[in-house]
Amino acid sequence: MRLLLKLSAMKIRFFALVGIFLAITLSPAEADVHWFEQFTLTQQPKNYVVIGAFSHHKNAVKFTAQANRVVEQLKLKAAYELNLNRNLYYVYVLITDDHELAINEAKRVRSETDFSDTWVYHGPFTKVENDEQGMRAVDINPETNQNIDQVSTSDKTDSIPQQNPVSTENFVSATTNTTDVPDTKPKNALPDNDNINGKKFIFKLFRGVDNIEVPGDVDAIDVDRTRKMGTYKGNMPVKVSPPNSKSGEVSLVCEVFGYRKVQHDLDYNKPTGDDISIDQDNDIIVPFELVRLQKGDIAIMYNVYFFKDAGVMRPESRYEVNSLLEMLKENPKYKIKIHGHTNGSAPGKIISIGDSKNYFSLADTKEGIGSAKKLSEERANVIKEYLVSSGVDPNRMQIKAWGGKKPIQDKHSTRAQENVRVEIEILEN
Image (tube, rainbow, N blue to C red; front, side, top):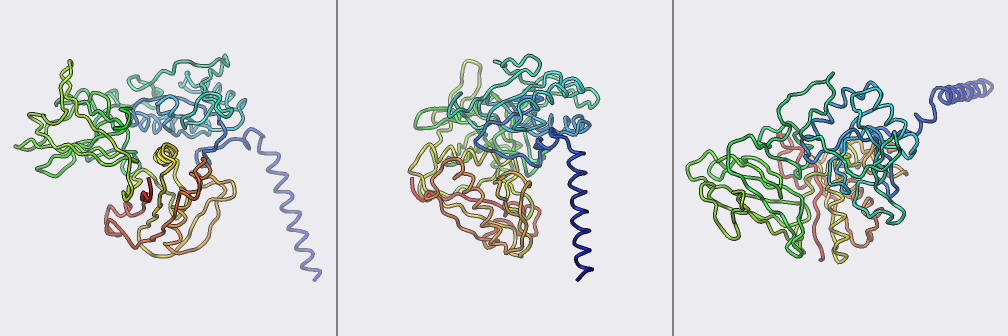
C-alpha cells in the first residue's frame, strides 16, 4: 500500500512539472493559433491571413502547393477555399479568433516572405450580407487597418516567390484524363486554356426558375471513343479541342450538385441544336437550363471527402456541403435522406468528432472501434449535424447507413475510393 501511494505521488509531481513546462514554453499567441489540421467552420466570423486570391481553382491549387514551401519556414501552412462573398478562391495561412494576432501575423508574412500583399480577411466564407446577425465580411490591410474595397487576383501574374520558381506558362489549362490533382479536386473549377486549338464555346449555366447564373462545369465526351476530352468552366469563354473521331460527335454533360444532370449531344464540326447560337465574338453559346433535384432523385456528393477511418470531413468538402445547405434553405419543403457508404465491410477504427464539433478537422476527435456500417452512419450523420448547426430543422433529414453493401466499384480496383461516398435522396420537395 505504501508503495502504491508513493508511485501515485510521483505521477502527480511528474504531470505537474509537465504542465508547468508547457505553460512556460508555449506563448499565448501559439496557443490561440488554429493551424490547417484544426480548421473548423462556425457561425462566428474568423480572421484569415490571406496571401492570394484566384478566380480559377486550378491556379489556387498550384499556388497553395508552391506557397507551402515558403511559409513552412514561418511554421505556417497554406490552404485554400472558395470565398462566396468575393467569388474568389482565397489562399490563406492562418485562421484565428484573435484579430490582433491575425494582423501581426500578416505583417510578419509581408516582411519575411515575398508575399508583400498579404492581408486579413474577417468574416465567413459562406455568403452573408454585411451586418447580418452581427456578421461582416471585410478585407483589411494590416499596415493601415483600412478596408480593402477591391481584391486583386493573381491568376495571370507570377505571384509565387522567386525562391520557389514555377513554370512561366499560364496556370490556366483544360483538364483532361491526366489531371494533376486526382481524387480531391472539386468538379466546379477546371478552367480552359486560351492557347489550345479548338472552337470557342460559352456553356451558359443558369437556373430555369429565375435565369440566375449557376457556377459549375461541363464535361466534353468524345462519343466515338467514349472518352472525356476535358472539363470546362461554365459562363465564360473556353476553347474545346476537336474530338479524335471522324463523326465529330460530342456529348456535353453538366452535373452540378443540387441540380438534375443536363446533357447536350452535338456535332463538333457543325454545332447546331435547340437554343444553340453564336454571339458577336463567334463564341458558340450552349445553354444549360438547370432544374433543382426533385422527389425520388439521388445525387452523389462527389466532392465530399473524409479523413481515413473517420466520420470527419476534410476541409475541401465545405463547398459542396454548403451547396446542399443553400439548396435546403432555398426550399424549406425539401426533406432528404443522407446515405452513407464505405469501401468494404470490415470493422475497424472509427474516429468521431468531439464535443467542439470540428466538422472539418481531426482536432478534438474521439477514437473507437466499430463496424463499417457504423462508420458510414457517422459519415452521414456528420453532414446532418453540420446542417443542423447551420439552421436546418433536423426533422427534414433522415440517415441511412449501408456500410460496404452497395459498392459502385470493385473494392480492390484502382477506383475503389469512389465507394466511400455520401448520397442525397430527395424525399419531399
